[in-house]
Image (cartoon, rainbow, N blue to C red; front, top):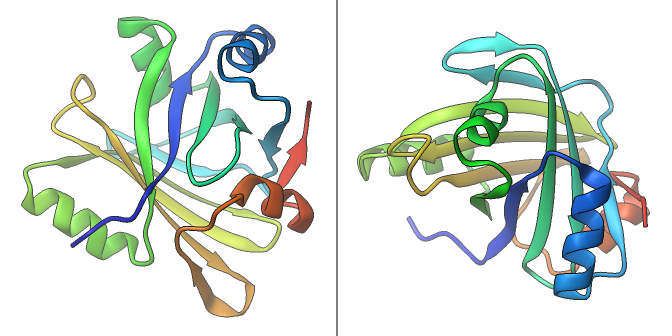
Length: 173
């Protein structure tokens, strides 16, 4: 299985406002967008359902953007990462059209699912899985997005700007 282009680089942060300032200055990002959930994500960590609030900000243009991840609530892959490593890059993300097939492929390469979740945003159904050898190894996020009418989204340039028009993202800066 071949993955497409990297969609985003995820950075776990302790303070969203400070991170927006830092990465805006560093990468010249002028606009940030917050992912809008229709309902809280159904998130599973270590096989158990968790009650978490995850605020996600996306900034940048083109195929690869920065994702700032601010976790709250029950223990999850992000809170544990922050405890062990502090604020830094957590994962690289690929959009896939078949999450189940992509996870099976990753498992055939020796990776395991570290966390998975599903949610709805502006009518689009989203499922993701983090895969890696461990939480302390290289971690890949595989995301499957099904748009209304059953259309599977793959790689889309300028995704944050397009998603802001559809209501998936809300501009915050």
